[in-house]
Length: 248
Ligand code: G3P
Ligand code: CA
Image (cartoon, rainbow, N blue to C red; front, top):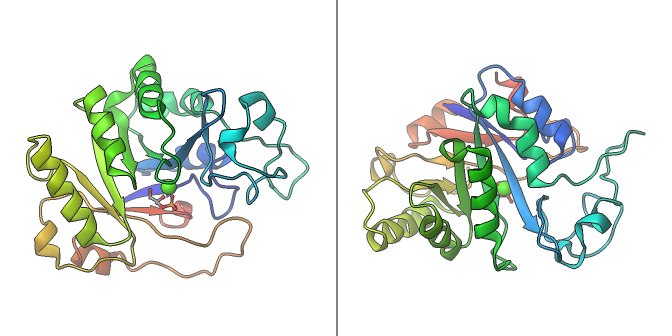
């Protein structure tokens, strides 16, 4: 089972921060890191999960209504004196690039199913190319049109379709593979860990990466442990988890 850090080490550190990514990149045996991107009103790619800043910072409002310099004045709720700010995608690549050149993968989730953020795909594909990190990236989205756009811009890009249910992921992946004349199994499936609703043999030979909601910093860890054997039997190949440090 390949283990990825979901929004970085997001159970014990604030999600999608340079701290959460730094903790994750230093875990021996970790396969990759997952993060979420949104776009500011002056066209900067920033790493934050929600469309609004309210939950994770001391600000109020939509990311798309802030300029980058305005967004940078907000403080992430760390529970500590040390200030932390919403990182740009460039800052994250600067932090991770050396580990990525040594095999660490990065799943960039384009958070564009609510607001489609015109131009987001061009910006992220161009930025990744500038760093020469194309091989290490998996692009995912709940918005399939966005994946088609990424493919158009970067035909070799690795793609993952996101949905709550594995059956829906498979349905969409088959559609995209047909449309783009790609080999069967070339699109990865990214269902919720609670949405494994079809038998393993239907996804045999495919990459199936599951994710989980909840248990984010600063909520208290439950001490619960995942049953990887059950996931493996269900055809899962990778897990995105908030607390990878306890499994590796
Ligand atoms: O990319 C997998 C997972 O992160 C999708 O759900 O809400 O945690 O971004 P969410
Ligand atoms: Ca995500």
